[in-house]
Structures are given as C-alpha cells and as structure tokens.
Image (cartoon, rainbow over all chains, first blue to last red; front, side, top):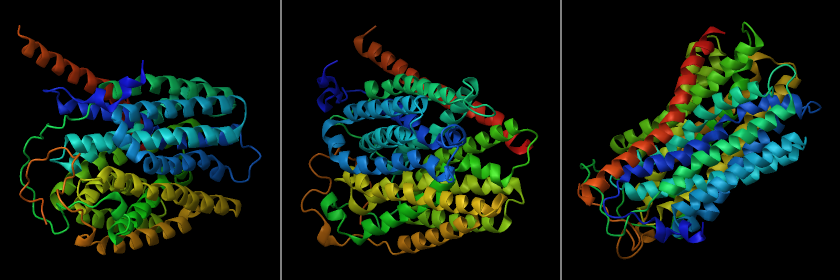
Length: 468
Length: 43
C-alpha cells in the first residue's frame, strides 16, 4: 500500500457520498483509543505483580495513564496542522499505528518485567496515537456537520468516552482467562491480555481509515433549522495565532483544565475508589466484578453525557451548559464529601452525573470555540486548547492518588481516604465556574479581515440565528 | 438496474455494515454493563 493511499486527495468524497458513513468511521477510532479510560482495570494487577516493593503503587500505576493523557494533548497541539493538511485517513492510520504499537510494547514490557517500558509504551507511544486519533475525526465531522456543531462534536467525542465500556469488561475477561488478576496473578497473563488487545484494535481501527472521506470543496450541508440568537456566537473568524492572545482562550483553557481535573482523577482510580468506599462483598471476586461494573457505568455516563449534553448545548447555549457542568458538579462532589458513601445508590448516581459532565465538557468545547472564534481555524485552536487536558491528566490523578497513598500510609480507611482530594476538586470547579462567567465575545481587533469562513472552509448554509 | 440505483444500494449496504461494525462491540459493552450493574448493587 503506497503512501498515496493515505493522502488527503485520495479521501475526497465522490458525489452522493453519505455523510452518515463518517460517524462510524470516527467511532471505530474513538471507541478504540477510548480504551485509555479502562486503564484502572490494570492498576491492581500491575501493582500486585510488578510493583510489590513500592510504597506508592497507586501513584506509580497512574503514570502510564498520566503520560498517555499528556502525550494526547501535546500530540493534538503539535500534529493539529498536519492532520488538517494530510487529511483524516493519514491521521487515523498514524493513530492506529501508534496506539497498537503502544499496546504491543506494553505487552513486551510486562513480559520482561520492565515497568519503565510500560510507562514509555502505553504512555508515550500509545499517547501519541490517542492525540492524533482524537482530533482527526473531530475536525472531519465538524466539516461534514457544520449545521449542528454540538451534535457533531458529541458524536465524535462520544466514542472516546465509550471506549472503556468495551475495554473494561474485555480486559477483565482476558485478565481472568490468562490468570493475570486475583490470587496467584501472573505477569504473563497481563502481557497476553495487552497482546490480544493490540491485535483486536488493529483490525477494529482499520475500518476508520478505510472508510473516512472529506467533503468535496463544493459540497453543501443540508439546511438546518434556525438556532436562537446568542450574544456570544460570532460569525467572524479568529486565527489560531490570534486566538491564543485573547483572554477568552485562556479562560476556556482553565475551564476545560479544571473540569477535566475533577473527572479524570475519579476515572483513573475508579475501580480502587469503589473498593475503598464499599469494601464489603460476598467474595474478593465479586468485589472485583462490581468495581469493573462501576468503571463500566462511569464509562457509559462519560460517553452518553458527551452526545446528550453537547446536543443540548445547540439549544441552551455553551455558556449555560458549562454553568451546569461546573456548578452542579461542585455540588455533587460536596455531597460525596459529606455523605461518605452512606448510600451506595446515591454515590453511584452522583458519580454518573459527574462523569457525564466531564465527558460533556470535552464534547461541547469545540462548538464553544467555534462560537467564539468562528469556524476558520477551529481545528488548530482545539488542538492547542487540548494542552489543558495534558495538564489535567497529570493534575487529576496526582491529586487523587497522592492524597490516597498518603492517607492509606497514615492509617486511613474507606471513604476518608479521599476527603481532602474532594475538597481540592470542589475548589477547582468553583474557580472554573468563575472563569466561565468572565467569558465575553472576542474583541473585534482579533477578527480576520475578509471572508469569515476562510478560503478552505466547507460551505455552510446560512443560519439566521448564528450571527453576532 | 441502473448504475445510479445500484450505487445507492451499495451505499446503504456500506452504511449498514459500518454501523454494525461499531454497534456490535458497543452492544457487547452494554450487555456486559447490564450484567455488572446487578453485581454493582448486590455486593
């Protein structure tokens, strides 16, 4: 297969090509790379087999996930322009290569008992695959669905949230099948699990880069129903270079960073958090199964929150949606802090809502950027904003794991292990809420002269409500 | 059958296959979730 096959020119959709072929192509990439959210399933097996001498197994087993998220943000920012110029097929193929290689290296690392290589393989190599894969379908779907940006980004990013829904039970079953988990857990079982995952995802992701197409320059989206006028929505364009000079970009950066920090710490340590809050089970095996169920249900809410709340933002407005994500999110964390797991059902409902807001924060932000800066270079601006995710990928797990490890070492048990962490998270959400309140329309001096959509943008039908 | 009609049928088949490709593993995830929700509340 020549490199030409991956070129953007080879992926221009022929006349009559249905845009409804693009969401499954995007989903095949995002559902795969969303496996990262199931990392917590591997934390205890790795700690029990490779980190038996460590006093900070929670922090150490978080490292591969943290580095993967850091690399996600960095590679999205660095490769954003290349993804635009080389096209989604190249991006999806590169994403598949790096992501599958990362899993393969992790398998080798576990088999040879080299934990540093687990961090490098899963975190560094796999993380590059996450970043390139994350932005490639987002940008492409925005071009195919310019009439409904919230819905489009919700579809694209929903898959990333849903990845753990598949990976969590699959990984648990594989670990049990290969004896990589539980009493007498064996490293080779964990290595085999990663190897099977690598092979499976290589096949699954192929559909994405084989099927994806970009719209032809003369393609027009179907006319959309009129949206309500919102003061913050601009039809003027701001370049990526100018966007980072505006206070709006940095306020939104803080909003995304702290919203992600609040959710990612819980996600990354979901299984251990559940086991610490509710340690009483009929057997260790049933506790592991329940914890895996907790990971899965969080993954489902993370995924459905993306499509549900992001689509709602097309009607309620982005700023109002972030008021809900951040304000209600802070109140839910306050409930978890005060209730201390007294009521399991309420604890789970609170976590479900928190994770739905977490996912929605990701899914709504490209449309928020499009509202503020116009569609001209929204892909590149989005890539730069994802550096907030990199910071949050370190900050969230660091807060939760560092606090938890220290509290466990000082003799705390149960829900009290996490109390200081919840307090910090509430403070971050309040700061983010204030930042969202401070966001105003961009100063006209940052607008690009001439055509608002720029020369390369896909044609968008006129929408009466989408104007300043 | 004209080429245009055949092309439309092929496209619909492709859409079906593409959605099934992602729906099957997603359905597996949902199925497993339903089983685990019971475990989640019974432990």
